[in-house]
Image (cartoon, rainbow, N blue to C red; front, side, top):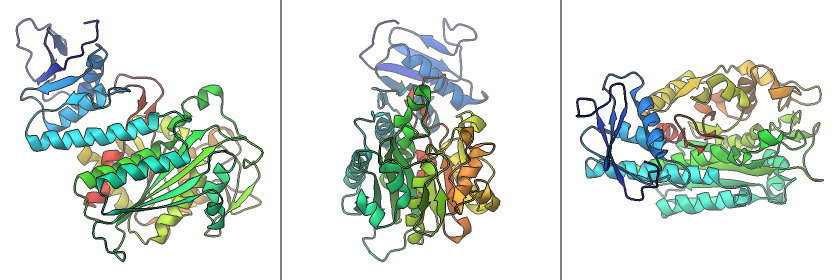
Length: 435
């Protein structure tokens, strides 16, 4: 099958390879009008292998997959959709089963497609204010009566003391901004905020004066992947019937070099009084997230979740197959693990203790944002999480930090097409809905 097949191709899933003509040891059987996937029910890592089979099928130049037959359950259909979907084919799967199941999977795939497409956009298309506007428009359209927004941009950030976002973004011609999206289904202005989501929205990361290499900078349009994931999580929860008040904060900036850009050795004084020496302008994600975490803490929400494409150290630790989880609150971490298991997403908890706050010392301020060594030195992902913990209330009770090691792939793999994956959306949606 070497030519593009514009008509939907039927895909069936079976646990038996007794069909006539089946080749021993093969996972796929291809005929003129159907592809059958053979995976016994007791196959180890069955969903992972199913996702790999979907990647192989997509690479046969098939435009649209039509899942058919009785072999598909919800989790297997979703695994296929993750493997098959790719740039320009993010919603090219038709599901099967009961109408309610089809609708649920269709809506979920649409939200993942929106989030993934957002992350895949070029830096020229997606600048900080555009990211805020697209997110506002999308979430408002889902629940127009229950969503209000507030946007702080440019010099107003400095005036209101959101100094992390302001300093990271001031070197760009595109203004930085802090977006607040308030989903309040009760429409009661005094209703308790049940959870806050905070996303890193660096629409392009040059590294600043700690400039990245060409190879390191090439995929940095994806550095707003955390913002796309938490926005997608809120959208998914809303479509699934979220009945709690949740606030979303996107910390949006471009990290660029200019006569106005922040510099190594600068000291940022945050709204909560913490002073931070800039040891690495390429450790900018934690600087902007600090503002979002303080804004979230001001609401008194018992659950605060942040997500970010934050550190290369997390990718090195997990291989990109897991989202790295950090928490000071063991109960919150257990909830995250339960949500990840319920949604079929892989997360792995890495070390974080209160003393990680002191891992980036400075002679001139309370802390530095990193260490002036490549990658921030040993334990870089935990040290970044320790920095963030300075900006959450109640000693980190109810706070979860997701370092999204698998949010984007520069090249395709056996599991994923190149580009954004959306990993983390389902876990975070479940957390704010069910915990």
